Length: 495
Length: 91
Image 1 (cartoon, rainbow over the protein chains, first blue to last red):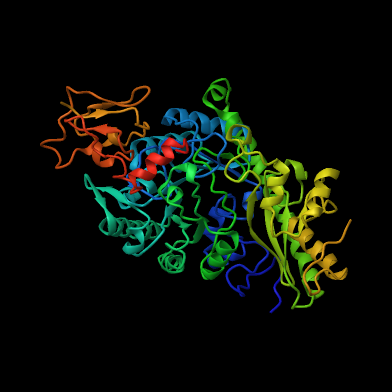
Image 2: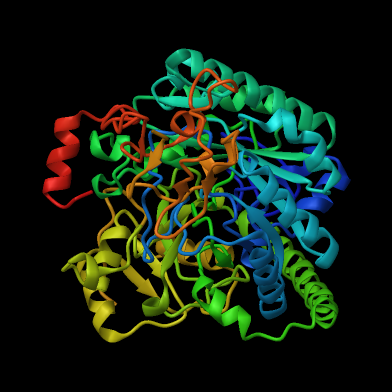
């Protein structure tokens, strides 16, 4: 059947054939209304919401009770954006102060999470002290926690007490033999335990914790790290099981394993998955609601996903800020109302357009095209090419535009002056856009335009301020009409 | 001799949270064990708790001044590989 870009839920063609992946309102149609209401303004849980709302993490939980082969506890780098990396460890009091300061300065903020760098539930005193204070002082902020699950069953009651209605559990396997290849040891009942025995305990605790949370109505997202040759095939089984047990969203993330990170996988040459391997696996887990807009952000990230404003809120800076949180809370409520009104209007306009757009019928056999989009939020093409630190990649096909993922121009490291990377920013951007035939942005300079064209990527600034999916489909239609989608392979035309 | 923390420590709090004798304190540049309070966990646990949870090889010395978690014992990375990477300035 013909799929609309946006419209009533009609799951088909694998997991994510709709205009928007992650957890859109449509994809969550199977969830009860009260749950959809709870995630509609959560940037990590709702793909659509992440264009509008911001989140922050506070690093109050440095201790961990397990070792993962993709983690190195010694590592920190100011230029890197990935889980586990932080610049400043905070005490609960400092974390509370920072949260109030950020929530007052960035009114789009809706969510405060504790995600490490260690395991928040291996640091229960620091984690719950932070939550306790925040649920009192910032009642409009949603509280989240991310855990490896080892001690989760012991903390479920406390989590419920603090009104934490979102928990993320990292579950990389349900088979201890696979687990033994991912976790060298755990600290359990006052002993270090290794190998299959350790993995067995961890898996049992994760599954028990998941079940307990679901029984209490807590929303559970499952994170899995995709490790080629270790758990790639196995993750389909993981996805099936966690869905069955009531997790509502699955986030399969690519392994990050650079030698210089000093992780076991990095040092031992374990490769990361390619974008197409990741997309293929996400599609194969199609029965489950899959998250595709994750930025694998730092454990102290601040702001919209893909934009880190952490440097504006270092301890010395927040000390100098005067915060009237009551006033800030009122302002936030007003701004959130305005955001919701504009989202409703955008949705209505899009579904009206989409209904006519797809009905006009592009031939079904047309090849699909990857397009990169520069956007700083609100779901529209609104960023200058040269300002984009990441691009959203969409696949255009006769069934509509579907979100594939994002690509960072400063893939894991932006510190080329300190890290000795001689590649220019433009060269790097062109490299990360490999496979995309078009790049949509609000504006672009002459020089990068030429370089992009030479690389076979056509820049397009004609759809500035238009909703992304409409713009992508408009360009796709134009490519069809000018004969660019006809076989044989795409040939680049000059501007 | 008490247990001791070396400069390899990453100040992650894990040992402090599990020490039954309250012998570990936050300090700069790294956490420290109060020799007078350290009991090696004798009477409390079969294994010394700090050494059993510490994620960093070579960060804790036992009562004989030996690394409780020698190079390669926690990550499984071969020692020669670790040494080569360290010599090359990669890690």
